[in-house]
Image (cartoon, rainbow, N blue to C red):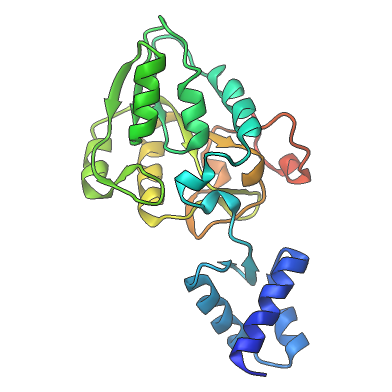
Length: 244
């Protein structure tokens, strides 16, 4: 079987079954696991799937560029944001990550409570400025085109001089086995740095992120305070997450 035929078969498996197990696919096609792993690596480089240990998973919907995500699961994001705002204490310093759920949360922040808001996202900063009277601190750096948040060396330098009571973390994948993941390497590094400077880390997990896996690891689930999920979501994987 030619490589192109194998890849087409693998993508069909992904569509039908929601995952690829390399060992099983190799046996079905009568080829070596090395051949399947090479095919999966090339398909991942093309953005067609996400490689995981033992096989591959679909690319998460939340891995799309931010402009395409604005209309994705908006009701679920709103419910997550309303739960998240209840975690914010008066006079605290919080970090709002980039992303559409963080943007929804920024618009719900209370006035007159002495909040300080830190963010690497220009969009979240503008929403915070328009909706609240919070003190606002922006993290500068190179703007990542995929997510429109600041990253790179300048952002990491700034983060080292900051501290927060709570970080509301946005990711594109929340999985019981594979942890928290995102689709951009610089974003993953910045998120880890912000988490390290925050007393509590809350994951903003709307419905399309549960069970999804992106290319770059951010944190294991054991490293976060809680996952804030949509109360209307009935995904069975929620039972395996540290909800709060």
